[in-house]
Length: 83
Image (cartoon, rainbow, N blue to C red; front, side):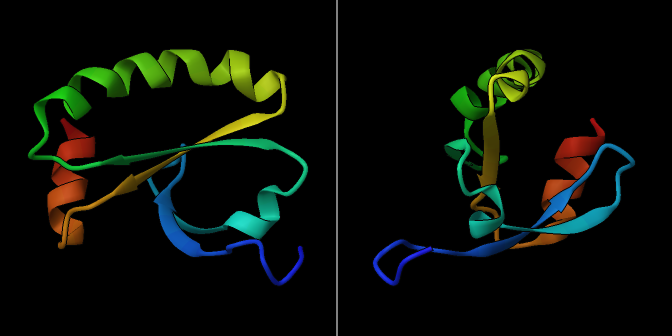
């Protein structure tokens, strides 16, 4: 990764409903779709199942979907995921 390429690190909930760290540079050489969302955003709620359904197909093609919550509190995101 060169100095002019942005990098960031986030916590994500994995398939086992556990927190793990994801760093953008770890996805190097893959296509990355960044999706910024919030639990308060109605269109975001509608698109989540669609992205979840597409993920297996695109993952096999080397594309990762990274959904970044704009919510300020982790508990809000956890409640959204659990529903």
